[in-house]
Image 1 (cartoon, rainbow, N blue to C red):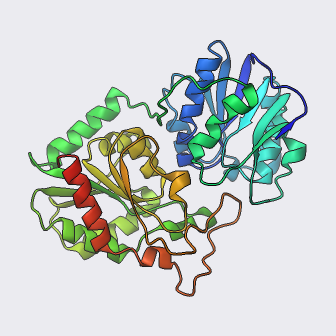
Image 2: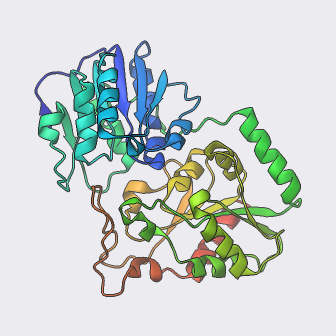
Image 3: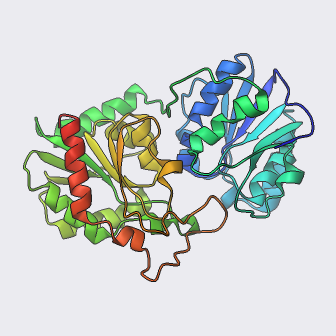
Length: 370
């Protein structure tokens, strides 16, 4: 751990840099609550840059003064530089580069904004992030530690403050408008007495993360198997870029529209409101896994190249389904994508059968009284 100068004991202005994906942004919320408990009078802002859903996922969060959104991915380098220098004029006392942000560009943004104390991590996979130059205080990534718990280490290890908000949980704030959307959707589509099972077959696509997805044909087989009992309704979730996948699963399953439906939601928080009504949620390691966790929805998660220990649904009931082969998990937190080296490409997911997942879903429903 580098500690050239002490972290300000009572900072007045804190900037949290949540620069990775939407799920990673959601997993900063326990840290935000701890920061607010430790520094109740501080200005706590959050910078997000990936897309507007990263901003929306923090909407209404009582521990944040301002969510600052700028889509760096669609703007030129000079405009991004000018924006960082504009933030520099806010004179933050502390910036926190949350886990996992193992890229040079993320640390460069922290340096340009220029808080006196710039906190972050030393990662096990070196990616030319120049942490030793661009960050002033770092703690080492530890194996088999959850993303949330890595972020929470900031308080005791760098601020020398005990954690105050146990038990920790992910937080998403749903408005009455979002809840009414879920009410209307279900009023039209859910027959009384039927269990709701949500599916999210998609994933992110950067850094080969599309390889986290279970095969479409397996989702089809799972839907058909679960629908053998007539008291279930299966709801497919996904973003606009996953719509073709959802349509394919619905078409190939050949189930009635009353049994297998696609959730068409106008926003990420509307989707969250509908997920909150599911009796069980089935997914791979994705944003919606963490949305379900934030809403305490029991989940069945299919793991392949990513680590259950680091990304499981935090603080919520879940069951993992995985093959346990020797090379899984293989993906680490770095700028590098998933790179399968097994002789059978993506055997870690190909070896997970619909029967394995169905049995796990059935056990989850029984344990929850569904």
